[in-house]
Structures are given as structure tokens and as C-alpha cells.
Length: 634
Ligand code: COA
Ligand code: AMP
Image (cartoon, rainbow, N blue to C red; front, side):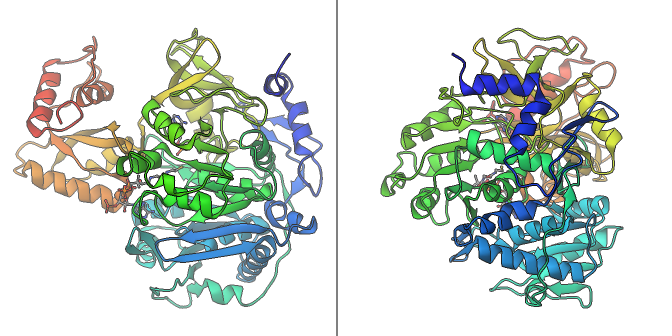
């Protein structure tokens, strides 16, 4: 007999329009769509385009109308400021609708864009939901990004306003945000009309009147706003993510398809229902934060948690376990890096043993590959299912995983599971032909993508088509490499482009190269992602200086580290730049980054037949050994 998973999966692939039309009935639409799936120029698709709805209505008002107004919608726990606040659905809607009303009063309207650059405080969630209520397209920028990165996003999204706060916290360190925002606005060509700032207790920002406005004062005007009806394909948000160059990709998410997909995932992937406590320990600046701190759990009527802390040192490696006990968390979602950090500080689980896991059911991991050692450590500790699942900013929700709500399949350590309903995931060879089981190749998804995935890139449809759809017509190219075993389980082995994942943060080595190349002493450079025990990956730079340069290696390294910190942010974790005489290249001039990575990681490699001069590889090996850098030479 077929499992529910098998039958739903087959239906979703065989007859996607019918399958997703049925799932769409789980939402309360203002107008149910007549057109379910439509094909666009370039081979991509829109879902439910003539349906009408409002995301903030579905996340707030609907639950209140159904009598769940006094259920807790949002729990805010901040060990770094010793604050705990809870908001019921009624209270959250009040804040959201008042903030939306005030923004409307400022002339911000449906279809406008707003950038949100905020730490993990409830006002960040309120700002997102207020935009959704108005049909305003938000673009949340991760608070760890430097002004240069923020400026790039301001110039691309052209926001009418930037919403921010006076500071964020990194462990016990206050990071003032306002100077970063001011700097970014100075660096950008586009000038927003307003900066709306939430003054946090503990550090007030200097305001520049009349441009800068106090968020609380705006809310206190009590200009309530009802949800505005938008078409299903109206963009809910733009979320910039690292591509292979210094220009980040503005992923555009629709409203209707996203709502249908997230709602479906809450019960089938995460197995949570209204009233359950769901905690994604991510940041609102990442896709996980959008989908599973804010929209997914609230669509489902769950209690969601906003945690302004770290897995360790806030105050100790029991931080996550304390949260699970205190808030009766049923399902938690985090990155393997966080688990590795806890494991390093509490290898025997002594902190873990102090807490009760009575209400806890499942731990989900994503953001980077979960190595089997981390998987086993946390599974043995929890004695509960641990599910590694794979997705991207582009997909908006998981593409591989174990759908516990539909079948009781066993996870396999090192595997990201099986295709999620709706995703026809396939492994292709470079020439686009299909590979056999256990052969490693390019991970692609056969079109149409299910609802919830990116619609396009912000105001650049051609870039979307060129980056994702053109290489293998009929397929969406994920940028990951991997394989599938004979039982249909997939193994994601890592990116096949210039994207790396540092502590679960997606970054571009191509962008780092562009920044390093700005240094006057640098002739050329290559940045590769090497293995890091805690962070999964970290960048390592190789630099060739211009002839006649007298700068020493330590001086140049310090300057480049500072350059990356200033332009991308400390999160890039760029710590090493190695001076080399030349970079290894093919005869046609392509830098052999993969070979450099293999050498640095101490992995066996074959000298590429296309290499211009194999002696360069020997020189690089010697330099790394001399500096005791890279995993091969520690
Ligand atoms: N704002 C400003 N700075 C930030 C930041 C933020 N939001 N996030 C990180 N940084 C800074 C850190 O303070 C650090 O700065 P430093 O070099 O001056 O010390 C730097 O960026 C590197 O940070 P990180 O790589 O996070 O290392 P860490 O030692 O501070 O913390 C972990 C290590 C494992 C605790 C942390 O990386 C972590 O919690 N990772 C999980 C991340 C996650 O959940 N990702 C999932 C996304 S889905
Ligand atoms: P992001 O867009 O920031 O979510 O990063 C997406 C990338 O992270 C993917 O393309 C993968 O390279 C990686 N990734 C995310 N989840 C997993 C996972 N479970 N296993 C392996 N890689 C993952």
C-alpha cells in the first residue's frame, strides 16, 4: 500500500495544478483563484495569479476571528538584555495595524518597498507584518551586514523608508545600528524619504529630523489599518542572497503561493498545529526567519519564538535547552553550526541533563550540510527524531527532508532526505543527462517549481532566467552538487559555484575577490571556502601582489581582513590571506579554485589536465605549510 507521502508526492508531480488547488483551500482567500498555474516567458511559472488575499490577515486576523485572539502569537526571549515579552494574537495585531496605519499616513503605499534592518526584536516582526498588511514589499537585511552591503540593497530595492533600531546585541556587546544606516544611506544613490527607528532601552540613537522618525511615536498615533487585498502574485518581499558576484540576487517572493506552501509545510513537514509552540532559532534577516519565525508558524496559529541570543555563552551551552523547557517548545529548527558550538562546550550534555523535554517532539536542521558526527551527537542526546532538510532562499521552504506528517521514514545521517511533495529533484550530469543512483552530479528541480518558490529576481527577470533556468531547459538549477541513493535518499555535497556557507550564513567568495582586488597592492586573488570544524566552511584568500610592491604579508593580510569586515561584515569570518607568486590556472586562464580548496583541505586531488603550470600547485602547498594554514597543515 502506498504511504500518504507517496500518493501526495505522485499527485503533486503528475497533476500539480489540481494538487495545489486543493491545498489552497486551507487558506481564507478574499477571492479564491480561478487560474492555478500559469507559464511565463522563459519557462517559469506563477501560482494562483488571480486569487486575492492578505498575508497579515491570514497570520493575525483570521485566528482572532476564529476565537484564538488570546493565544500567544509571539514570545520574545532576550538573554542578552534580560527581557521576556509575550504578545497574544490580539496584541500583535494591534501593534501591526497601528504601525501599518502610521506608515500609510507617511505616504507609503501598496507596491512601495521598505527596507528593514533590525536586530531580533519584536518590532522587526511587527514591521514585516505591517508591510504585508499594506501590500508594501519588505526587504529585510541581516543586521550583521556592513553599510556597504546595506547600501547595495538600498540602491536595488529603492525603499521609501528604512526601518531600524538603535542597536543590536552580539553576546554582551552593543552594536549601534543608526551610524551603520546613516553610513549606508550616504553610500547609496537612492535616498529613502524616512528612517523609522525603534529606540531600545539602553542606548538611544541620534535622530536627523525631519527624515528620521521614532517608531514608537508613530505606533502611538493609533492609526489602525485594515488588511489590504493583494493579488496572489503581488510580491510579499524581496530577500537578497549571495550569488557568485558582488551583486546580491533579489529573490522575489509572491504572496499566495508562499502562503499555500508554508501552510501545507507546517502540518506535513513540521507536524505542528494551532496552539503548538514552534521555534526557529535563526534570524529574521535570513529566509528561515521569514518562513519559519514569522509567516509559517503564524499562518498555522502557532506560538512562534523570537530569540535574541546565541546557542552558547548567553549564558551557557544550555541556552537552547532552557528555551525548550521554559516555553514548552514542540518543534525546533536550527543550523548544524549551532549544535556544533553546543557540542564543543558541553560534549557530555551536562547542561542538557538539567532540562525537561516533555513537550518536545522533533529537531530540524538546515542551512548547511549536517555532518554525521553532529547528527549522531544531538540525536543520542535528545532521543527524539532529528531531521536534516535542505532548502535555499530561492525555494522559500524545504525541497528535501522527511515528511513526518505523511510517513514514518527513518532519517539517514548525512542525507538531507527525500523530495518534499511538489519538488521533482533530480541529479544531472554536466551535459544534462540523468545520472544513476549514487553518481554525484548537479542537483536540479524539474519545472514547474511548486508554490512558495521565487517568482523572479527583483526587476531583473532575464537575470533570473539566465541564472536558474537557461542551463538545463525545463529545470531549475539549484547551485548544489549531490547524489541520490538507490532508496531515493539525497545527499547534498555542497555548492558547485562561488557561494559558501559560513556558520549557516550564505556568502559569495566572488564578492570577496572583488573586494580584495580593490586593494592597491593586489594584482589578482582567489578566495575559496575551506572546511571549518565549527562553522562548516570559512573563506581563505590567495593573493598575488603587483610587481614592485613592498607591503609585507602580515600588513596586507590585516588590511584585507579589515576591508572584508568593513564591506561585508564580521560574519564573513575572513581571517587569512596567503601571498603566492601566481595562481593556478587552466591554459585558457580560468583559476583552479577547486584544486586550491582540495590542497588547503588536505584532500587527494588530481592535477587537472588543463593546468597551465603544475609547479604552481607545489608552490601553494609550500606556502600553506610554511604558514601552517588550512586543514592539511594545522
Ligand atoms: N550583527 C553583527 N555582528 C554579527 C552578527 C550580527 N547579527 N552575527 C555575527 N556577527 C559577528 C560576530 O560578532 C563575530 O564578530 P567578531 O569577529 O568581531 O567576533 C563575527 O560576526 C563572526 O560571527 P560567527 O561566525 O557567528 O561566530 P561567533 O563566534 O560569534 O558565534 C556561533 C559562533 C556558532 C555561536 C554562531 O555563529 C551561531 O549561532 N551560528 C548559528 C547561525 C544560524 O543559526 N544560522 C542559521 C541561518 S538559517
Ligand atoms: P540559503 O539560501 O542561505 O538558505 O543557503 C542555501 C544553501 O545552503 C543551499 O544551496 C545549500 O548549499 C546549503 N544548505 C542548506 N540546507 C542544507 C542542508 N540541509 N544540507 C546541505 N546543504 C544545505
